[in-house]
Length: 449
Image (cartoon, rainbow, N blue to C red; front, side, top):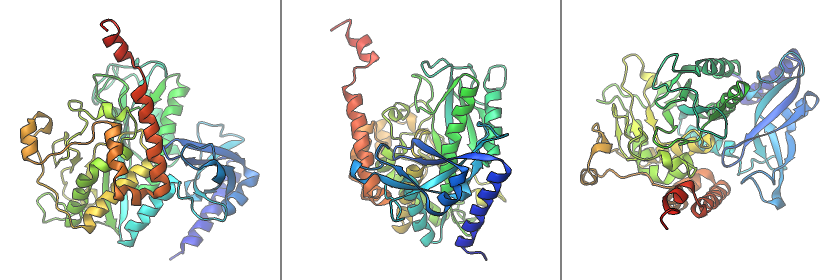
């Protein structure tokens, strides 16, 4: 059995060898800020070996939420296991590679404001209990004519085929590009709304998947740009039709055994799975500012558009916050729960972190979930929902932030630096939105007031 240090050395050797074989000249070092925006700077291949050993210094003061001016020196340490050559850049000569980085402070300690580091800390906590966290997010997005309009490319609907689905070739090229950078794809199809699409990545461990989500979003946008159109992960860009979600399938494994599976349970859920599910339901309101972090996210989280707003779970009903896919004999490893409120514009490192923290809290406290709700919760009366104890998610970013700001669980999960920086960023966003005069107000009030 090889040690992690030996595995890391082999990964570094592989990167150096691959750069020589592929004539890589530039390497982009990728990382994210607290809000989930991808950041990058480039080094030449001549600097690569030194970067792999000690990282590359950079000024972090200008990065949203990362650091104050008086603590701006940062070090980006590339993770060699994330190396790939970018296929949308020149590949025949002077090729461009990329690696995700862990952000350190001078001296080599992890920077507590690094979202990737936040996820690694939470995964380590799960590992101390013997668990590996696996996720499979389903990211929806829209294609528009350009970034200045919401004019779509088609009038297709769910799973529609050509000629309505004008973006089929865009999806095909996107899938091939994702696979060329090592991201496994299971499905791609037209979604419910006109010009809305989905490409589903193959289930994997949470850290790899968070990196994959960041790559996925830029690949979708790059391929769209190449063809003269615009792709957006904005949660609700068009009024009156379904918005874009990021349903996250998740499970815990112990070794190669799915800790969520129990053959004897009528839902085939283990006690671990039930407690995890209960933890997610209990903590859902206070983690929503992380999983749905934009003002626009709450234009999606309204009844009537397949987006979950009620705190309930079920097997078949897709209006619930948590869905448990039906068990298929012989596929025990596929037992999982699907958390449906996150949207594709979130920071995946923080989103996966808070979901895991909520689930582990449920396990540690031996929580039991309520009975599943197979009826359509949207069609129940308020009295019926109240009698069954079905609560709702927060209805605005402001409401969500108030709950998150009081959450000891989210604070422990994110660490003080990210927790307070995130909340401060979001309060500024809410204040700007709250004081803006919108087109709706002008059309509604100007003619009559």
